[in-house]
Figure 1: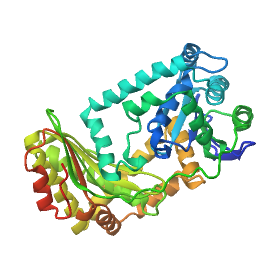
Figure 2: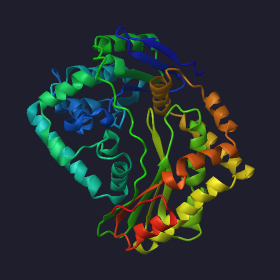
Figure 3: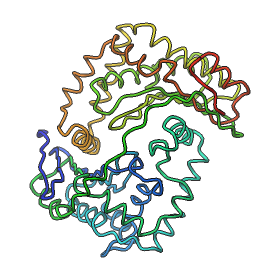
Figure 4: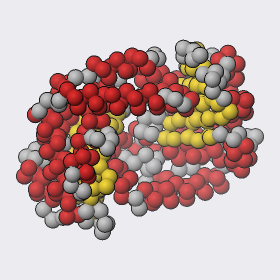
Length: 431
């Protein structure tokens, strides 16, 4: 039987949140640090991601090769990821290997040595990763769009990976400065779910992480910039497709309307029955990939739409997207459609929590954002409370013409920006 999640503080105040799932044979554990590309200073662009990589390049007692061998020997998964506001180090292993996994993660985060020869190699690896993104238009469009919407003066507008120039500048001194400033106990959460003994895990984690210091009180995250729609921005490239990204205002992560925005996103472009998928792909065959998504941060957010289409279809696809947005703002969604979308979301929410990894991740999110566990039944009730009037109000909040921005990458047809400016008077072309 599943037990209720428990919460306990390590000696230095790091929250440990756990959920025991005795019927499983695995356990997932994550160390979540509230730091990411948004927290980087002007001369640190990409250092959060660089640091995430270099933790694995050697400690006082393990070489990079020994770490790689030990990770493989655990037989599960151990990895890390960097976002705009958080960095996570996580593992999923059989329950009888949890002690070894905790020992390894604690060693990486406490005793990494950042040898210069390893840093030099990793600079090359990350520079190739940057080039790989720029060779993938469907991925690169999102970096270009973030720059367009949030601006180069805001860390939210900069790529998480940094630039070739910024990554080339990082040395061990820069790494240690950032580590001491951001990797502190007051910015960490440790979560675990699966077959575990919470008391035994607490003792292991307190030994491994309980002595980390608290950070400087004056190192605060810069406030979010205003979401500033800047009309149409075009990046001309010789590509087979035009990648389009249209966005409007979203909501912060803990906003009272957040479940309404989840429903709106799903209705708009969240699956094969969504309005955009049906209208653009199924009825007209103008795109293979078209979807909507949410970028949510602690104090701001955006709701975006992405499509890839032939250059000659770019204007028509953008017009179809705009027409669907206008329809959502002007016409109340029918009750049957609302219920269908909510039913789909509730099923996905329940099924998504079938694994120890997803439960571990949800525990961490609850702790970081809400500082309290949010039961599944409560989230399902919140979805049930969403109605058509709320969806229309949120569509007007997000996608009023004065809130829309469009970024286009590829062989964009002549007149694209002028057409959008004419049909959306608030948009001002900037090519």
